[in-house]
Image 1 (tube, one colour):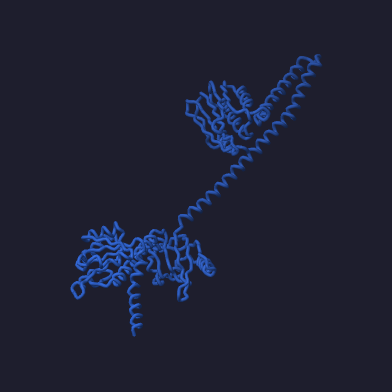
Image 2: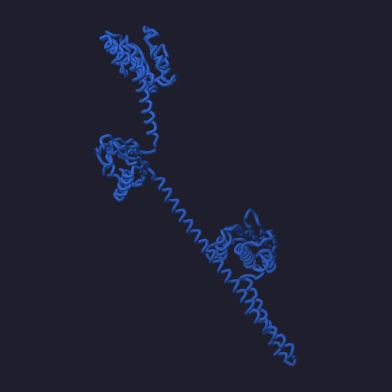
Length: 500
């Protein structure tokens, strides 16, 4: 009998210590309890809390309790019933210590205090006096509840700041929603309540019909493989607009064997539009680059053809005419017995032949001057300036190394066309040509003091010249006010993009 009594006392002592051990495990390093009122209870009543590592903060009034909750990061408030109504009202108004756990104490045997405590709406009511294990159990429960509330508040804050709709739905053909955040209304136009338990519509019903099979197949393949899923598809909003969404999620197995999908849905319509615009831009740029390359190839082929014609004229027809003229001149020298009339006719023929030969030389030179190919741009420009009927001041500052053939040709024909226009139309007394390398470009400027009024209208020679300059990725600008002369400026890149 004595042994049985000892065993009972042993078990009772163990039961008494259980709340204290639980409190010690829950308290950790940062547990804080605020005491408001309850001055009639001595410090020995709270000794068990202090022994479990709980920090005690005693305050004089409700304002002090709120400050302690905010500044001391307290989790539990224990107050007497008389302070309950003011404390709970202040906490509801401040909303700062929303996770705090409130225990009100009512005197044992006082029904009025108990009713007052209950009416205040605390989390728990405890009778005074209380046993240490009761206090430990209540505080342990309060600390756990406060931390759970804090975690829930953090989770709500995180979910609220996710730029998408967070959900839990059944893994069925309708994707029946059990839980869905309000962000879905911004995405789909329908409130979340419409989809909960498919009350008004199923989520599958807002997926564009052409995408439903792909959505189901992708999700189920990931679920069966036990991996997360990620897919993009279209939904139709309430207003009829079609939006692109990105969905990420993963399956979870419930205790009852059902599979749930937890995930988030994001509106990516703007991103998809930007990607499409970028693809179209890349495509247009590629087409533009091909057009430029094609134009450059055509221009290069035309230049080669012109050069070939120039060589053929120089080596073929021009040489034949020179030979004929020489033979005719020798014939006249050998046959001095010819009458004056015959000699005069032959001299006239020889003069016409020489004139035609000069025209042929000019034609060959205009097609593609040999000096440009053989000696470079500067010598070719000197030749143009010497042949101009208007005095030309020429300044050329170029590197010793030859430029790309396409750049030299573009610069040469720009100067040639501009000085031809000066000779024909400008009625100028002087002209100038400046050619220099500057910041990776060749800048060409041709000006005169003539009548001005030149134009780059379609069909003009300058329009064709602009196309030639553009073929090497250059630019051509014209400044020509009536009565104020004309200035033509070309800027030609000399980097790799300029070569043909």
